[in-house]
Image (cartoon, rainbow, N blue to C red; front, side, top):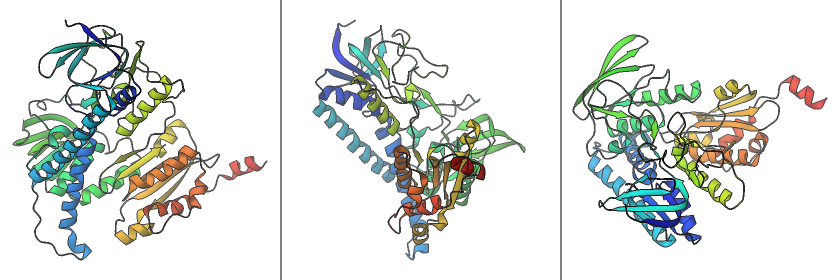
Length: 473
C-alpha cells in the first residue's frame, strides 16, 4: 500500500454539497482533496437536473411548433432530430464541467478522479482511473456519495436492460413506445418530454395514483394534463414480469384492479426511486453506521457516528434536491465555524418541471390531516389569473393551507405556468413568518402569475367562530 498522503480536508464525492465544502475549505487555506469516480460536479450538471431540463426545454419547442397554429403562426411539418437534441444537451454539460474545473483551479482544492474505499478510520484507498493507487488521509472527512436509480426486483427486468435517466438522456433516436415504470417526479418529466418529441408513452405506477406524496386533487389534475397530451397512465399496477429487451421489443405483465393485462412497447425507462451509494466503500471499517435503508445515519448537524466524519446530500437521507444539498453545505459550514445550525424543521421547496410545472412547499392537506393540524384551505384555478388568460396557459390551480388558530401559511402548492417562480414568493413569506394577509394585500405587478397570490389568499376562509371567540375573550 502506498504511503498515506495527509490532507486537512477530504471530500468523497463531488456533488453539490461536497464541491462547495471543498472549495470553501481550500479557499480558507486548508489542504483539501476531492475524490470523484466519474461525474465532475456530481449528477446534477451531468446526468440529472440540468441535462434533463435541457431536453425538456427542447421538447417544449417541439410541442409549441406542432401547436403553432393556435397562436396564429403557420408552420410546416415538425420533425425531431434526437441527435441534435443530445448534442445541445452535451454542449451544455461540457460548459458546466469546464466551469467546475475552473473553480477547482481557482480554489486550490485537488480533484482526484478515481474510486475510493476506506481501509481504516481515516484512510481512503483510491484506485485512480488510470489504474494507479493513492492513499489519502485527513482529520475531517465529508461523504457526498449520492444515490443511483433503483431497479425493482421483477422477473425479467434486469435482463431487459432498461433505461434509467442516465441512458435516456443519451438516446440519439426516438423510442416508438416508451414504457415508464414509476409515476413520480422523474418519471412524469421524462414521460411528457418523450411524448412531445413524438413517442407513444405509457406510465405504469404501482401506487393508487401518480405523485404518491401529493394531495389527490394535485395528482388528478396532473393526470388530466398528461392524459390530454396522449399519455396513458396505468395506476395501481403490480408489475409481474418483463419480457424482451429495451430498445427492441418489450412486454410488461401487470396486475391491476380489473385483472391482469400485458402492455407492449419498444423501450423501458425505470424511474422507481433511488438507492444510496453506500455499499462497497468500507464505511463499516471507518466506523460509520447506516440506517435500515442504507443511508448514512446522521444527527441534525449532519455528523455521522464516526468522529470527524460528516455526510452531506442524498446519502445522508436529506431530501433529494440539489438546493437541499447546497443547504447541507451551509449547515456544516456554519457548525464548523461555531454557529449552531440544524436540519430540524427545515422548510423544503421543490418543483417538478413538467409543463405546466408543479411546485410545493410546506404541508399538504393530507400531511396536515395525518398530523392532526387544523388548517384552512384556499384554492384558485389558474384560469382566474389574468396573466394565465393573456398567455392562454390556464391549466392547473394554486392552493394554500393556513393555520386555523393563527394566520401562518402552512403550505402552498401550484400546478401552473411559472409555478417555481411563484413558489419563491410564498417560500420567502413563510421563511419571514408573514401572515397570509400580507400576500392578500400585496400589490403584485400586473399582469404576472404571482398576481394570482393576492386572489388566492383573499379567499382564505375566516377562522371558525369558536377560535374567533377564544381570541377575543
